[in-house]
Length: 146
Image (cartoon, rainbow, N blue to C red; front, top):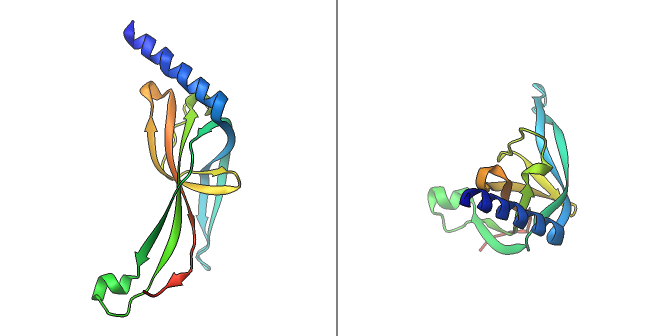
């Protein structure tokens, strides 16, 4: 009885979050992937699912620096690298918004507000009532030499 009450409470919370913070997103899954043997170009076709109301939490932006491989390999005095801004978001998507039997995976990506976000983590809620997605968008920065 207590377990059923908890599931009902989870469903109610998901519904309220969707109503208050729900935005439209597009969920992309790779349907087919072929590679041209001559050019090496990879051609992908996607299956899209339009989610009418996904709860999107505020953006968390951090600036990161990645060293060039030469610094890691040889520990040279002359190294290169680059700064980039990483935008991380958390999205809550109700399992009812996906087709029956659909299970999201890490190879998928999400489009929100005209930006592409890569899925970096998926956490299912109790009995897969909803999915909590951790997604990242990377904005390129200029290459710098410290």
